[in-house]
Length: 159
Image (tube, rainbow, N blue to C red; front, side, top):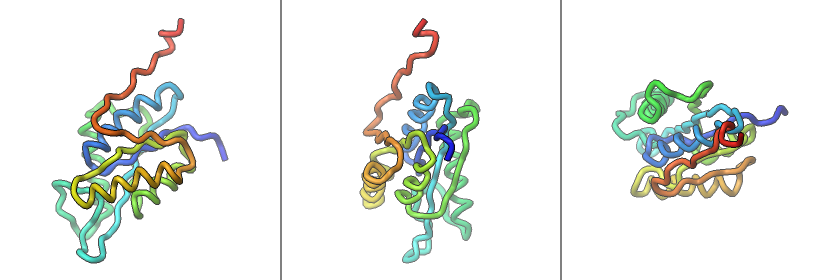
């Protein structure tokens, strides 16, 4: 397997995941890595609605398309027209922890927020970051609160 050259970031539309996107961009730069924004979706069988943090999105009969819409909107909200070069957007079916752990197998780094949406969903999403730190195949950065991204020195700073 070739060496990992990308940073995976978990996105669910929450403020925590928007912060994770900002961090992923900064952390990918020194290694000349690309960023892969990953959003997981599941069909909640009890209610028949998507359970992936879709504020403002009315679920349709195509939950994968709904998740893609939220992912695109979240990335655009964070970066506007200045998306990181080579950024990849991935929507995958499955529990968020399982999807991100699988994505970590080919990643240089995994970046996640410590909490997603509030209430009961927020408690579950907090368990996603815990599962990722325990089972990911690469280092994991878990963001707490609104900590600003680190200032990474440029190559010019070392000369």
